[in-house]
Image (cartoon, rainbow over all chains, first blue to last red; front, side, top):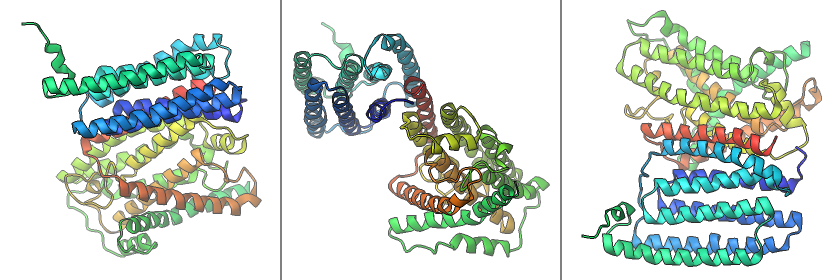
Length: 220
Length: 314
């Protein structure tokens, strides 16, 4: 180990991100899911700030601040309110049982690590070894979206995927240009609000947030 | 060499004698946290003394295995306690078994306990033995994975070398070890029949695992098993300390560091016991069929630790 301490901390936070992804995969309650999402955002913001500090990339500070405000404060608050309003916080069994999901998750992690290895060798950043973890987070969020059928976990899965992509950008190229990141942040924010309205509409129409009902949509 | 043997003897005896004290400390913390008045910290010793003075009652159908098993279990745990470095590292006894053999020693004790439980033929014994096997066959691979993670870092399965590498080299953050530590915690909770998996203070037939197996034992046999249980908790704690908080364990032949090592050990065990009691107080026992999920998570964490070692630390 010849890494400096702040890089070791970034590695530790990357590992934490992966752990939170798995925790989200195994979480049965929606409120727990929202809390985990907030923690993931916090780990992401902290690691981005440390990368910014250790590499003197000032625009990353702004990214970290946006992440902190949006994904740790605003969106979890909005989701908590949504869950309370819709009264949907009860245990939801995912479509595949949890130990099986976890095993699929491990396979995905191995796949992502192997996939990222040649890519990260081409990259010149100091944080390139965490690219595999970022990719694994994206795939795990995908898996979460596949195994859930309720609307709110799906939205959170989508946001977790965005978290993974953001982390991948930070670790591979020290983040995207600030304009792009601002655009993405705005998109995500608007997306969440639109999806929130959708969720209300879905419940109005089907009396449930289970998206399985939407498979039956047919014109008579 | 002779100092080594003396130290080895002292360390093993210390483990055997202090193990009930750790149990008493955990029980005391639990009582405090639950707002009960706590039993004295020496209560396990009193229980042992009482049990040793009683006459053993043994079922008519009991085979010699039933009488022999408690001695075997106690011997296994004493052996394990001798191998794990608690205060001094690299003692003459430690090359006897590496971490994989250590898992084997625990398994041997468990097999004898399960066999003895089935030996009497009572329904409870069989039930307990089967449940114990269910828990342990899931916990064992996870424990091995934890050890593999530590072995990958230090490139040896010998405990003294692992401790040497982790304690006396330049300090570095190992994300993989953080995962392994959480996994190890979950495994030791399951293996020691503590709360999320089993409740050590229940005799409720639907939920008990460990207690169901030792229901037929009495007097000195029961005392030996209780002592072995305390010793197992102590050994697991010492193992956790050696793998994840190894600072303070005296290096080989460093006699001057021993008092400090002893002090560090006591402090770490006090802290560990308090944390164990706290976590037991805030969590509820899970259904038996959720136990595989609990241990599956432990296995997952251990595997993740290994994968992360390959990604970040090579």
